[in-house]
Each structure stands twice: as structure tokens, then as C-alpha cells.
Length: 109
Image 1 (cartoon, rainbow, N blue to C red):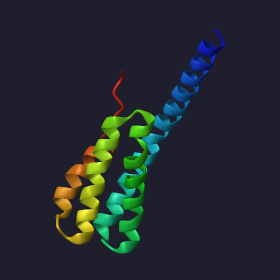
Image 2: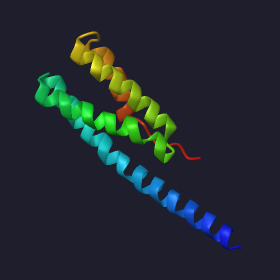
Image 3: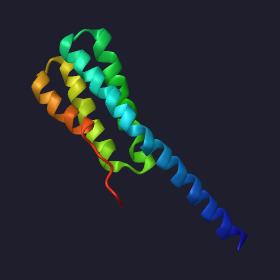
Image 4: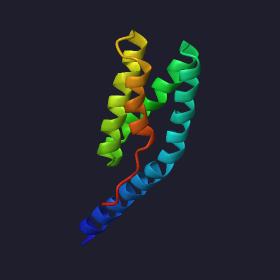
């Protein structure tokens, strides 16, 4: 009985963490939107690095919090951002992946 209570308590705590993480995603995507617009206006390192950092954070944490699709989209957006730095992709192509991230919505499961 005690084992089941602990297991349920752990599940509740994990669900709470997932919900807290997910509730912050809209604001983080708004920030990425602003950073992407800033980068498009001025492709300097000053605008590049914050964009890369924010997308990287989501790419690295979303799957851990149960948002696998968001993590994959962010990972692909991060790859495109890195390619921008190396000039192996243009802004329009990268923008498609970044916009897919910005437009992500949590699906009800």
C-alpha cells in the first residue's frame, strides 16, 4: 500500500513539473519570435547567440518533460540556426524551421 502511495505521489509530482514546463512554453516561444525578428533585422553575433541559446534550451529539455514533438521541432530549428552561422543555409530556409517552432501548440493527449 505504501509503495503505491509513493508511486502515485511521484506521478503527481512529475505531472506537475510537466504542466509547469508546458505552461511556460508560450512565453518562451514569444521570446524566440522577438529574437528571430531581431536576427532578421541584424544578423550580428549580438542577435544570433540569444536566439541559438533559447532554441537550444527548448531542444534540450522538451523531450525530458514529455513534449517529444516540441523537442524534435526545436532540434531541427537549432540545426538551421547553426547552419545560418556557417552560411550553409539561407534565412528563408531556416525561417521555415524556426516558424514551425514558433507556431507549435501542445496537443491534447
